[in-house]
Image (cartoon, rainbow, N blue to C red; front, side):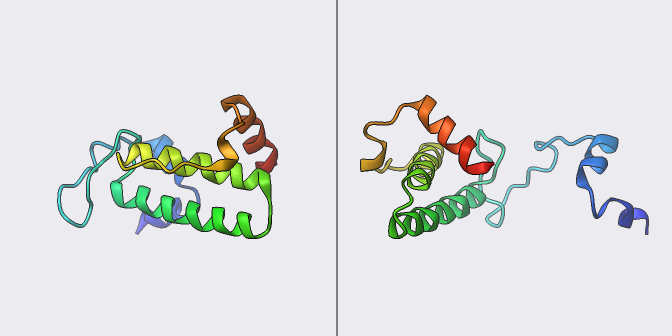
Length: 108
């Protein structure tokens, strides 16, 4: 009955009880494999799909900064999943520092 205390703010729960992702790792077809980033493989595939949708929307609306941001995220997720990394024209002339600046400016 006391679990309702922590429903709104999970940070309070984790600060009080601690959180160890390896403790809750489950083996089975439903949970897939735990990656180095501490996310499950199926979660990373979901993030990759959402990034592709964001990239297509940004491409259709001609939003160059968002295109660069999503292309960079797509490449990172593909590297993490050990699949073939896609090439993007918008990333050819862009440095890592410029990508960080673009992501910070979009998130503000």
